[in-house]
Amino acid sequence: MTYTSRFVGIDISKSSFDVCVLPEERFANFANDAAGIARFVTFLAQWEGVERLVLEPTGGYERGVVEGLLAVGLPVAKVNAKQIRQFARACGRLSKTDRIDAFVLADYARRMDTKVLEPSSPAHAMLIDLVSRYRQLSHMIVQEKNRREKLVNQDNARTRAWIEQTLAFLQQQRQAVVDAMAACLTSDEHLALKAEVLMSLKGIGLRTACFLLAGLPELGQMNKGQIAKLVGVAPINRDSG
Image: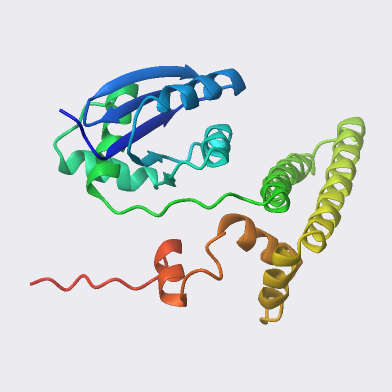
């Protein structure tokens, strides 16, 4: 039988990713590196009518796969993991393995509407990395401050000095990241325009604008109600009965 539409689920981990192609239920596994992604793209070339590829966010492990697929013009969608799990439960699939997860993702692509990702500009990709680094540094700064606080009643000047040195370095690097974010915005006219609109609102400065642009690339493409629902702050009726 010849199918006109095919759907691909991609379950990604740090070192590899599992793939399921529906409706044939063809499974495959690839290394999560440049060579593995290239083999995956070659694997997909044998299938005609690939309508959608769906994957979950995995803390950045999916980035190489997404970029590789978008580079060859394939329709990729990224779906919240909670939605996928709820879909799996609704379908009666309670077991969880890499192959099953890949199948569920492909089945979700076949049955549900999903929004295709747009290729990111180099500046936007850099901004995402900078925001991620800013969050990491902020977390480390809080950790060091907590350690310093615990030394209040302890006579350990050497340890305190080490902590102060570490804090000074982390704060210096975080400021360098902020400067790099500002330069990143000015390097891209589209990002700069979005940032200008955001910062014209009361309470939104450079850092908040960068966080929003990095985490919500949909800004400017959806209305305020759609954005609120996407973020999870839109009021939803729960008055049945």
